[in-house]
Amino acid sequence: MIFAADYEARCYWQDDEPLPPEGPASLPRAVDVLVIGSGYTGLAAARETALAGRTTLVIDAGPVAGGCSSRNGGQVAFSFKPTHPELTAQHGKAIADGIYREGMAANAALAALAKDEGLDFDWRPCGGFLGAHTPRHLRALVGAFEAQVPEFAEPFEVLPRHRLSEAIDSPLYHGGVIVSSDASVHPGKLASALYRRAIAAGATVVGHCRALAIRRASVGLEVQTARGLVTARQVLVATNGYTDGVLPWLQRRVMPVGSYIIATEMLDPELVRRLIPAARNVGDTRRVVTYVRPSPDGRRILFGGRASAGETDVTRCAPAMHRMMTEMFPALSGAKISRAWMGFVGFTFDTRMHLGEHDGVHYCMGYCGQGVPLATYYGRHIGRRLANPAVAPSALEGLEFPSRPYYRGRPWFLPLAVQAYRAMDWLGV
Ligand SMILES: Cc1cc2nc3c(=O)[nH]c(=O)nc-3n(C[C@H](O)[C@H](O)[C@H](O)COP(=O)(O)OP(=O)(O)OC[C@H]3O[C@@H](n4cnc5c(N)ncnc54)[C@H](O)[C@@H]3O)c2cc1C
Image 1 (tube, rainbow, N blue to C red):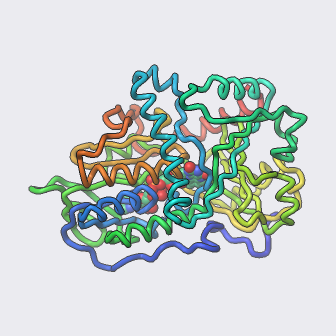
Image 2 (image 1 turned 60 degrees about the vertical axis):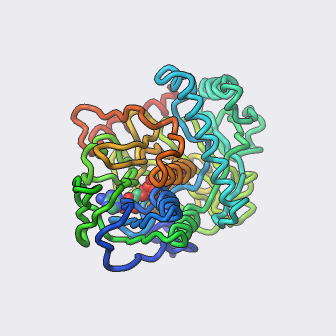
Image 3 (image 1 turned 60 degrees about the horizontal axis):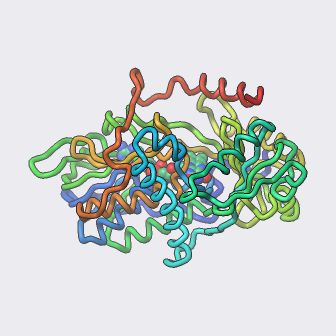
C-alpha cells in the first residue's frame, strides 16, 4: 500500500496556505481594467493598474489563484528555454539580449519581493542540481553551461559521478551540474502575497466567475461573464494553461499540458537531508521532465513529473509516480504518499512565453513551466504598460505568437510525444 492514512487527492501547499477569499458576489458594470485569470500574472498586473488609479477587476473561472499559481513545484530557475544562440538566430542579437536580460531580471525581482519588500513566501536561495542520465548527456550538459554567453552566464559547478552524493543520493545519474542561482518558494504563499498586494492597491478580485466572450464596444470592450456584462477600457487575458475559448486566437496558441506532483508522508528529516543535501531543487536531462525538492519544512519529498501519456486522475497515476520516485530514490520505497495533485502548464509552439495585444485585447501567458519568476515579473510589467503606454516595451512584444494547422486547443498529439520521449529517455538518446 503506497497511500498514507492521511492521503488526499489535493494540493499539499494548501495544508498551510488556504486559497484567498472569493470576493464580492456582484460585479461592477464598468471598470477601467478587467483582468481574466487570478494567478501570478493577473494579480501582479492588477496591483499595478490599481496603484495607477485605474478601477481594476480580476475574475477567475475557478477559485481565486486556484490555477497553476497555487499548485506548482515552487522552483525558480533562469527561465527561457530557447538558448541565446537560438533566440539570436530567430530574432537577432538585440532581441535575444533583451529577452535574456528580462529573464535574469525576473529572478532578481522575485528575490527582491522577499528580501526588500518583505513578502513572506518561503524564499530560499537553495540552488539547483541538474542530473545527467547518461554519460553523453553529462558531456552535453556541461558543454551547454561552458558555452554560456559571458554576459548572461550563470555560475555552475560540475559534479562528476564520484561526487554525486554532495548533491543527491540517487543511482540514476552519471554526474551533474549545480546551479547556485536557483531558488525555491512556497507557491501558495506567493499567490496569497500577490493577492493581498492587489487588494491593498484597490483591485477587486472575484472567484468562480468565468469570462465567456469578449466583444468590441463603442468605448473599449464588453466582456460577457457568468455574472453579467462588464465593460472595460482595457482587458488583459492571463489564463496561461487554463486558456479556454474566450479568445479562440489564444486557445490556438497555448497547449495545456498536465503536470503531476506527489508529496510523501512526513519523513525523518535526516533522510531528507541525505537524499537531497542542501535542499536544492532537482531536475535532470531526461526529455520527460521530472522536478523534485524537499518541502520547506524539510520533512517531505515533493516529486513532480508526468507518469502517463494522456491526462489522468491524480490518484490513479500516484502508483506510477511513486515508482518513478523510488527509481530516483530507492531509499523511499517504503515511504507512503500523503498528497497528490496536478495542474495545467501552458506550453507554446516555440517554447517561450508571449505577451502583446490581439484585436484590442492584451495577453500575457505561455510560460512553459517557468512561470514562478516569469508570470510574477511580466504580470507586473504588463500592468504598468496598461496603466502607462510610455513604459518601455518588453523585448518579447511584437514577436510572432505561432500556432499550428489543425491545433484548436486540445493537444491530441501529446500522448504520442510523451511515449516517444519516454522511449528516447529509456534508450539514452
Ligand atoms: C504541477 C505544476 C508544477 C509547476 N512547477 C513550476 C515550477 O516549479 N517553477 C515554475 O517556474 N513554474 C512551475 N509551474 C508553472 C507555473 O505555476 C505557471 O507558469 C504560473 O503559475 C502561471 O501563472 P498564471 O497566472 O499565468 O496562470 P494560472 O495561475 O494558471 O492562472 C490562470 C487562471 O485563469 C483562469 N481562467 C482560465 N480561463 C478563464 C476564463 N475564461 N475566465 C476567467 N478565468 C479563467 C483559471 O481558472 C486560472 O485560475 C508549474 C505548473 C504546474 C501545473
